[in-house]
Amino acid sequence: MKKTIKVVAAIIENEDSEILCALRSSRMSIPNHWEFAGGKVEIGEDIFHAIEREIQEELNCSVNAIKVFDDSVHEYDDNFVNLISIKCALISGTPTATEHSKLIYLRRENLSSLNWAPADLNAVNKLLDEKM
Image (cartoon, rainbow, N blue to C red; front, side, top):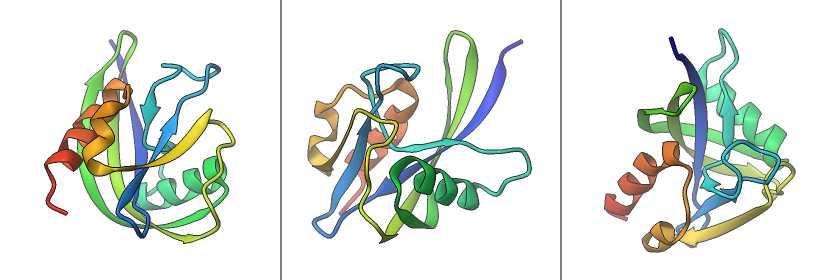
């Protein structure tokens, strides 16, 4: 039986309404695919605390979790990923790639130009459909 892994991902928009996208490094699973930065929720951890912790660890900046944007499950070969995308506000620091190969801010209408990790596609499509 496949295990379900609960993962949080940050949807961070800058003042120009561009969305932060992170390129998975060659050392990560699903390398060279784009995602919304985040990570696994620890046992007993609240999802809002998890995303704030993960962004501090991964991007060396602080965010405030605002609200759940998307909650979907994607099946991979060896597990299920329950990806909870959370809209976040950057409150201090500048996002810095420490685990990812690259970080970019991209206009919403250009999100589909990237090669996204499969689990992130639902949130990407929802962002493309969302009214600005």
